[in-house]
Length: 308
Image (cartoon, rainbow, N blue to C red):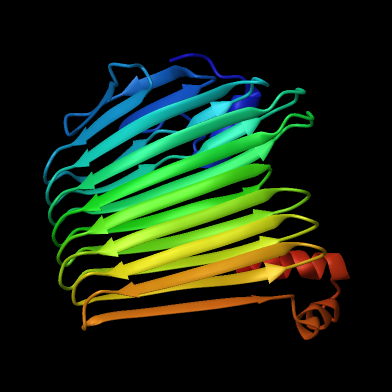
């Protein structure tokens, strides 16, 4: 494994909660190179033939194992596009931790675009965690454009935690999913923008089989002059249930656009959307200030609780 410097180690901690080499299968990518890779008897990680990503195979019936595939970038002006394909066998139950951290201290933009494709086998369960983080005092931007494709077979389950709290200047996050009979998709997005940052999140979920269900919920905070767009569309092509929700706090001169969409193509497709955008209630701030907090400290406490 390549030796990582302190900045790279900090980025790994931010995006993957890693303080050391993880147990189980992992691939750590640093500045467009592999910094370390390991497979297990049940999980194999192989580089793609074109060198632009990974192919991960998880054997049927695999239980209580994890895969870590974080990316860190510390070079200004570096741009990359990688493709990672996951094949999760029937009845497997695994956790996959991804994410990217960019520390840009230079004048050029740094960008990581990652396409993740998940093929979730019958009855399999996947918990997927993706965190994005930016830092550095350079004038170059920190840009992250993740694309996620999910293909779920019968009675499979996928829980996705999508987090971006700090430092990413521009992001265009696109997620599509195809759900077979009895498949269940749960998405929890947490997002905060500040300064002049822009963030667009787009979800398109097709429930194609009887008993399929999707629950897509986003919580976000837009500060300063930042801009956010949440665009979520659920399509019910069978007797299914779907719910999408956007709950946002707007501050300063921030802007938020919520575009929920529902399309029912079956008489028993039950689809619901909710959207709420508003500022922090004054009585919440006053209550915390009576406990000794300043107004700024009170705002931060409310935001931290909201994004948990």
